[in-house]
View 1 (cartoon, rainbow, N blue to C red):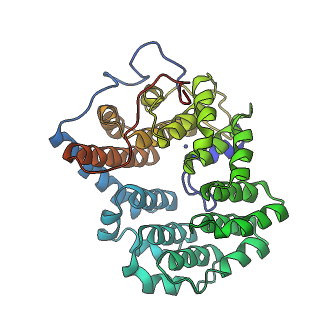
View 2: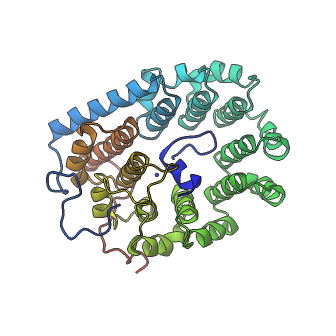
Length: 376
């Protein structure tokens, strides 16, 4: 399997989110899963699980491994920003000597509106490292200081390092507002590197650009699993409603590469449909890797598929998945990567369930339907 698919299970400077199957089992037990898939937890059990999940993310945020720190920062940003600030997981990592970790923390600070960190961010905007500076400029813009936002265009158009251009495209796409579409399209016409082109397309899709969405949809129908999976991930990130039929089609089509169906399930879930719930639950306990090679060993495949299953379940936020999440979180030998993916899925699910019970307004609940009925 090529390196593009390998990267779905790990973080790197140009692709932070990432960001990640067992084929249609006839019973409701997943491989390695000792109990019914559909099981919620009591309120007390949910509180205990949530506290353990927060603790796991906090520990990873100060781990010696940069990848773990980045994943933890992303988790705090997405599902527990208040805890991320309170624990220092974001502020202390802004000053990390790892450019990748600092990048993640600065992007998180900007996205959650952490104005209390403005002085740190201004200091990091003077960094000699282009990745750190890009993220700091992004954070400054999101916090209302837009005087230097134009510097991002130079990183995108003129920097000789493809990774720097990709991160500039990523940051520009997350600034918000369609005023950046013209710049991104100019960069797309000039760009030669596939990595950067893909990031530009995702950023354009996030800004609801029709051309970019259609380009990614073409890749999403590809018979090449790497190409299809990356495109589905980006369309899911963009919550591209135009891709609803594509998501339903890829979910319903069996594949030797579970990543394809799991990204399709996640895409549908982000549009409000939990068609892939049982598929994701089974693959939370995936242990049957195929196409094993030196470049894509069995352990990496297992972690990647389980992580992608957790990401799909996070998007669904269905409390009947909490029992399976708890077993996966507590499973002996579970990797840090998978535990963190399960932790953030559990936190989102528990918090949204509490809001629903309290009658508070939250995101639309997912709707259970048969796979392939997304557009009916």
